[in-house]
Image (cartoon, rainbow, N blue to C red; front, side, top):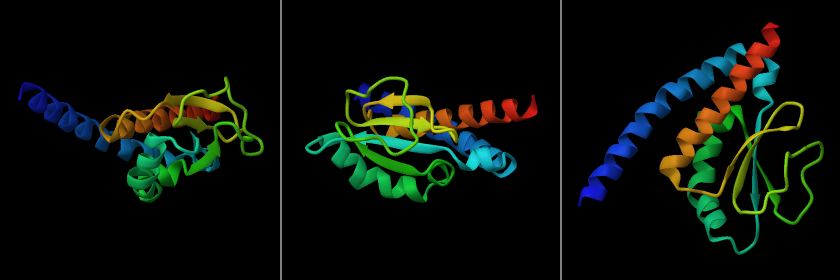
Length: 142
């Protein structure tokens, strides 16, 4: 019982944190010009991956319609297949799913290895996008 209550509190806190991050992401995307629009979220997956299947069924359709999905559209690649053209990763993924934020230059910015569930995915991806946009704004201002 205590765990359920604690999980509910964690979920509520994550949802409260998510709203300002999404708002910030949208504002940065509108003000950030082309660089902000060129982020992509690469999902590394493989056939038979249970968590990939769950993500693609339950989260991917929502992500594509979300503000995060508008800022960093979801693209897919197979774990043992070729990467999309022009993408450079800092290391080879070995767990599926792995979510990798890709910048306008095609270089990996940050990654989330595994799918820890919806409650963790949304705030983490929101943080990744907001941080990337903040860095892009700083680079543009220098």
